[in-house]
Length: 480
Image (cartoon, rainbow, N blue to C red; front, side, top):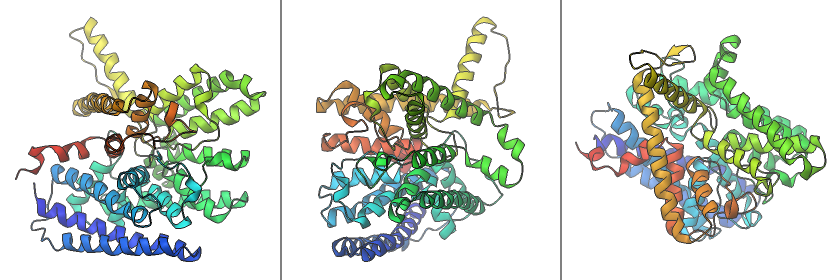
């Protein structure tokens, strides 16, 4: 492990975060929130000092490999969350450090799980920072950093691979920094379009920014306790619902459309499966809940928004789906597990990984009957390498192991089984709400400090595809 280059790079990332604190400072000045302004300025100084000290570490040979890439990614996200929670603690608006850390990890990982019981009590500057972490974390903190500070060819490659959501991460163009610029260019353009549509519907500017951050990052933090249900507007629900689905699509497809290769983009197998799952869930849930709302139109309205919110792991809410019939609740839990597309801002197992796992199982069953048969698995028109398939199987095994261990630890709170299991799934898949006490009408405040730390670990592990965080706890990772 080249520890010096790891620490040097983490220092660069912290300096960028220190600069980002200026944005909530501006919001605090606009709304005359002096305590919040002071808290962000103090945090900016502390973060800049820590980043500056790490930057003084001479990196030596700057070439790195996968191990350093995992370490940089995992450490950066932990450190960003640590310093990012300080404004809440310093201002005493979230006085407990563990609670503040949980909330900030939930923001950066675009999970949207919360310990807050009175969201409206926070200053606007705090609400802005809380949701802005969604927008930064959605496409990737380190991808964003590559745009501002070039990290070097191989360093960028391994960091992007470690941070990218999904079974694979491909370069759109030869240079990784150019890839980062393209991704954030598409991300920014879609965010700006959503902002314009929300403003056109009459939503206040501050609310628009908060909801754009939550939708684009598929995070789900709101500045109202009732989430999107606060507005009671079908227009906002349709617009945000559609954009949640759009941000759950692989961004590589948008780049193909930008290159006018529209047919190639719409031939995507993962896209077909993603839209098919959404259509099936919306229709069947609407039929199942029709009697609760008196008309099929209202049932489809609430079904569409909820399915869009859950499969993209955004977590916005308009209705308490925990009160729906068992069939609808079961489908929602399955959507939590599946998640959005690889290369999107959404979480979950990812549609492409589920497809590969299903095709691997089908091939294995055929080999049981025809032991000498040789069959390759194809995806998106290409043969999938055995290494990729093995990685998917390993990921699934580790995923369920982490889930099981987390549920055991969380169960020490003596909360209902449904709450414990769906709470862990909600955090590990970066969804936000679960069922029971952690449902759309609840929160995670009842969990113990230990459970909140475990769930914070789950959020980080889920967002970074498990391995970058898990490798930090391996002694082998830190050996020379």
